[in-house]
Image (cartoon, rainbow, N blue to C red; front, side):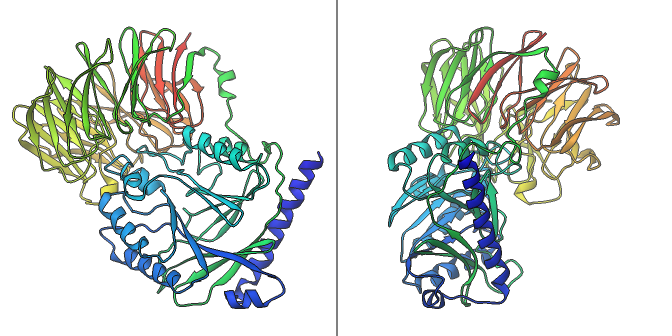
Amino acid sequence: MLYRRLNLILLGVLMAVVTVVAQSNTEKVTTLADAMATPEVNNIAFSFAQFTDVHISRGNENNTIDLQRAVEDVNTQEHIAFVLVSGDIAETGDYASLMVAKRELDKLNCPYYIVPGNHDTKWSESGATDFKRIFGDNRFRLQFNGFLFLGINTGPIIKMGDGHVSPQDIIWVERQLKNVGKRMPVFIVTHYPLKSGDVDNWWMLTDVVRKYNVQSFLGGHYHRNMVHNYDGIPGILNRSTLRDKSEFGGYTVYDMGEDSLFVSEKVIGQPQVRWAALPIEQKIYVEGNEKEFPRADYAVNTQYKNVKDVWVREIGYGIYGTPAVDEENVYFGDDKGVFHCYSLKKGKEVWAFQTAERIASTPMIAEDKIVFGSCDKNIYCISKETGKLVWRHRTNNAVLGSPLVADGVVYIGASDGKFRALRLADGELIWSFDDVKNYQESRPVIADGKVIFGAWDSYLYALNVVDGSLAWKWNNGNLRPHFSPAAVWPVVAEGKVFITAPDRYMTAVNVADGTTAWRTKEHKVRETIGLSEDNKIVFSRCMNDSVLAVVADDCRLLWKVDAKFGYDHNPSMLIERNGEIVFATKNGEINCLRSSNGELLWKHKIGNSIINTMVPVGEKDWVLTTTDGVVARITVK
């Protein structure tokens, strides 16, 4: 109880100091020289800067200019020892923009330490692997003047969801803290704030670090100066380097005093203005305040007791693809680049196959083989019995696309501007369509002699399966890559291909000629689609609570219900089996509705992170994987 009181007192002091300084922000401009001359700062031990939300974009030169000016401004201030760069380096995480950022950051006269943000990890043709190649790592460790600075990634990888701290990064942070002990003051740099609605598993990190002398989390994401409380641990968020509607951009300067850290905003060409102060002292944190900062709630599992976990396995690395399942085993790839085979009955590992980079591709079983892509720029075919390599096909960039196998041919997209047809038997190239303008990540569909897929270049493509020639390509009228029909798995019914995209439209395109058959924004759907087993009804999920069914023939609304799953944009497709549709959310919840009328049948929660598209097993069971590194089998009684 004493420790809890001390913790609350310390937090109260912090918030009071921050409030006083922030309120005086409009009255007093404090330069470094002023600060060193005033009694409130006895000594400046060292200073450092923070850049965040740089958003280098090939379509906006101003963002690059703002970074250049920030670098030049820091270079005029010899007292700045280093720069922390806290994510959203590139608008779409692309190689070219990241290289521009590196070129400019390398002009700093002092070292810089960098982590990615969600824009670097969600939209990335390399599956967010270029960031590590360009900057050396996705995290950093800096020990300086008796302080420890740790930086980690909190952006979702590939999937559209909340921020997420990977299992391996939580382990890494705990190891670093154990190495320095409980007395050294620590700052942890993330992109996202560590709170509900921003990071789905924030407490897994705060519960680990609260045992150590963590002074504060430092971050960005909101593009403005803010002070937060992450379950009793201070969090400081900072302005973007971007100018926004102002004439000049800026950044943050931290001055480490004898017993306090002073936080200032530095607009280019103006004196820095102090807006917050953090007392530096031995922090005391006890157990988390679950009343004020609630963790994941599993009460739904007591409401629907007919759904049970058969087995649940945590592999320690994120999983970003849907598993493939046969009569005996479950197959999936992970963030470490390992492709696993687990027994379907007991969830025990049977074999593992190592690739050189993370796997985000959903595998497909064909005959006695299993095919998938890897971010190491290869398409792999391995024996499903032994896990031994059968063949691999080298590409020129990461392979995020998921394969479709039909009539002995593997159809798969990659990030090198190519969509390929390979011979299943030996991986030989049959044909290649070489005019895709951005990367592909979803699974294609075949209809009417055409293979159809979306890419992050705003287009839906239809290629002739015989020779790979372009039959047609469709665009939603907007060339912005973020609105592309690229994450959805398209479905075909009644001569139409149905898609949803981030533009929140549900669209039906005529398979024959690529013309628009029907299109509506009424329901605000996003990147989820599903098809009934009889190919007559199309299902989709809205971004807030609702699920709908549309008759494929005439596109009329059959039903729309409030399933009460909250705000969600997880691209988990809706799967029908035996008159029931199942889909999963970004916060670890599985929902089952009656497909004839949308009646809610059951819910089940497993973790609090993104669940990939579910896979039915037999009559009652389902297999799933999550970005939190969980593979599981559940049953419905």
